[in-house]
Length: 355
Image 1 (cartoon, rainbow, N blue to C red):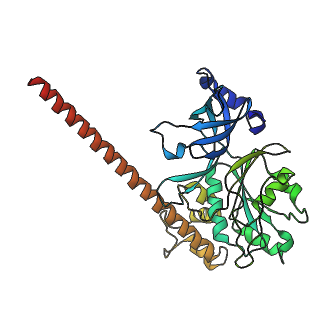
Image 2 (image 1 turned 30 degrees about the vertical axis):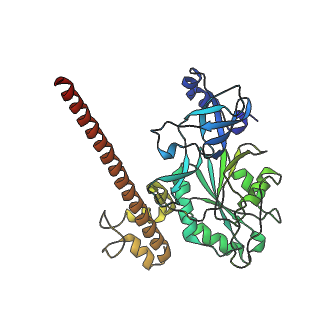
Image 3 (image 1 turned 180 degrees about the horizontal axis):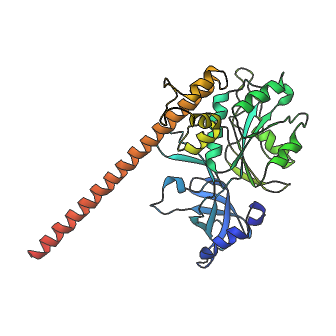
């Protein structure tokens, strides 16, 4: 396997010319760990040290799917990642640690597959959250409904999910019967990432796309319907039909971060109706002449849908304000250090003059 098998093309080659002039070679991160990455370069798989500049932001830590400039070495495991090529797209969620920094789940993706199990009760709010991340990433969202053979009313489930995914292709599949797999393969292109909680069938779907059992799968607990984390890391694998698959561990939490455009796309029918509100700053709560509230009253839009939109807007705004506060604090710390440095320099120059 070489970079050509993982999506390297002429456009990337042109943009990489400056790096080649400094003796660097292109590579793609197929698996990222703390301090090291498994990458694929022009000569094949390489183990490389990840050493971004000390001033780099946490968001520039190498992630699975990244294209990187690699300094090769004749020694085993001695190659070094010098720089991360600017990402075309990225799936980013609010950090699970509760910090104001985002966590990059996948880089340079073309198709974001939101995997939903029909064997479990459908959770529209979770689908909307993941769709907001998918739209914001810059990739093309696709919703894949798995385990159709275990659903009593597939058409009803399809209608319900389609109602919370406007403008998104929603496909029905079953790994047991093979239903819908050809349609799914035809809908995916480029680098494909699978997103969803544990137990929805991401790894099983991935194995169907790969044509072999490369990804570990596990049973869902009968007590609560939750799946075990059979995927422990994010990894890139070439697809036999072309393109690349990026399997991810199950998402326990999906916090939104900077998903303004993603929310507009996810709730596009509400955003469109908002243009007809009497007031341009309408909050769609109690304002007279609110076209959105009128649509809720007429059952054109479910109240749950509007409540979910408001909730995600508030969460997105809160995380943004927290991030702004962090940036202000960092600037203040930097300014204090600069002032202290200048005072030391002035004091030192004054002492030298009196000697």
